[in-house]
Structure formats: C-alpha cells, structure tokens
Amino acid sequence: MLENIRKVSFSPAEKTGLAVLAAALLLFFLSPSLAAIPLALFLLLCAAAPFLPGWGFFLPVISRAQRGIPSVCLTFDDGPCPASTPLLLDLLARYRLPATFFLVGEKAAGYPELVAEILRRGHSIGNHSWSHDYFLMLRSGKTLRQDIHKTQNILKKSGIQPLVFRPPVGITSPRLREVLAMEGLITVTYSCRAFDRGNRNIHRLADKILRRLRPGDIIMLHDLPTCRNAESDEWVKELEQLFVALAKDYDVVPLAQLIDRPVNIAVK
Image (cartoon, rainbow, N blue to C red):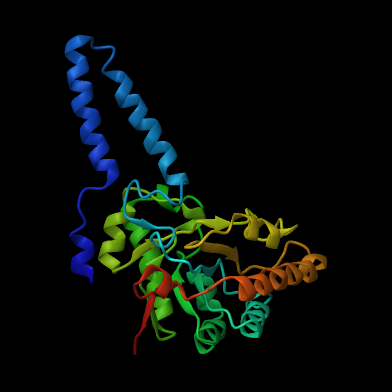
C-alpha cells in the first residue's frame, strides 16, 4: 500500500506551477511586467487552497464518496473525551449507526480506555494529529512527521493502526504529502458539516446537517463537550434528532465502505 501511495503523479499544485512558469516566461517576452500576473495569481491560489478541505491541491484528498454512491457516513473529530465520548457511543448504539472517530494523540494517550471502547463498539479510528495544533501545517516537515508518527504509535498501543489522517481544521500543506506517504496514510476530510465550532455553536445542529446532506457525503461532527454544561442536554437532543433522521431516511455506512478502502488495521 505504501508503494502505491508513493507512485502518485504530480499534484494539481505542481501541474499548475509548471503551467504558470511557462505562461510567465511567454509573457516576459511580451512585457516583463505582465509576467508577474500569473505568478501572483498562483501565490494567491496556494494561500487559499489549504483552507478548502475538499480540494486536493497539494496532495490527494478524499472528502466524499465517488459519484453514484447513495450512502453517507458519520465522523467525529477531536476526541476522545470522558465528557462526550461515552454519550456518543451510547447514542450510536441506540440507533445502530457506525462512525469513524478521528482521535487526537495526546487525548488518546490520556484515555486509552475510551479508545478501547470505541473499538469494542465496532467503530473505526483515524489519526487527527497529536495536539490539534491549528498551525501544524506551517511547521517544518520534521515537526509534522513527528506529530503524526507520535499519534500513530499511541494508537498502536491500543491495538490499532490508522490508515487515514484528517488534518486539524482540514488544512493541508505541500509537506503533508511526503509525510503521509512515509506513514502509510491517506488524507480524508469531509463534505458536510454544521460549522459548530467544536461544539461551541450547537443551535439547530441537526437541521444544519440535514439541509446540507447529499448522497456520498462524509459528515463531520465533534466529539467534544459543549462550552457550557447547561448546553449538554441540548447537544444530546440535537444528536438524537440527527441520528433518528439518519437511521430512518439514509443509508449510513462505515467510512471504509463509503471510500472503498480500509480505515484502520489491527496490530499486536
């Protein structure tokens, strides 16, 4: 699998860069000042691309199923957390819904029993970085690899090796491609979210998801407690409303089935 990842062709960023250089060279002979235009546009594109989770500009990104897939899947970021993970697991079991939990390494290290419970309940696990550093993609390649590798090692202690990685806030970078190839990981983001700001804004969460949901979507929610304890009941009600609708009207499948590749493997 690792060999296949390393055989990936030029990324859209690399192809665009070559085209821009060729265009700039041609324009230079017409007018040197015109040559700066495509170069400036390319720089703007590179600055904007990392913030578009569904666009694999720097590396291949899976954000939804291929066309023609009628199913959807559930994913939860930023856990595990003793205040929210058990509630989520019970709700998922009640409505018989599978999910993938993209775990933060330092939290997994602190709550190995929750990692074990996620697996015991039949859900899958992905790598979501060590500490959810919002600026991780601006760090050096060495720091980036250490962060992702450290999380892989912690999760292996729970008997699981993730094969998928979700960058914090969905932001990617040119350095990420090589690091993931070395770790045997692929990037999986999302195509449907409630913009809940890490459960800071749970008002009408279910409605926001259901209005946006389309066949083939990867839903992204958060495995985090709400900002105020008083909102916990509302969060549970929103999740119940969402899960009832999903169980009744949608074919919710594991992430591995939706993207047609394994999400994690068991290790000793």
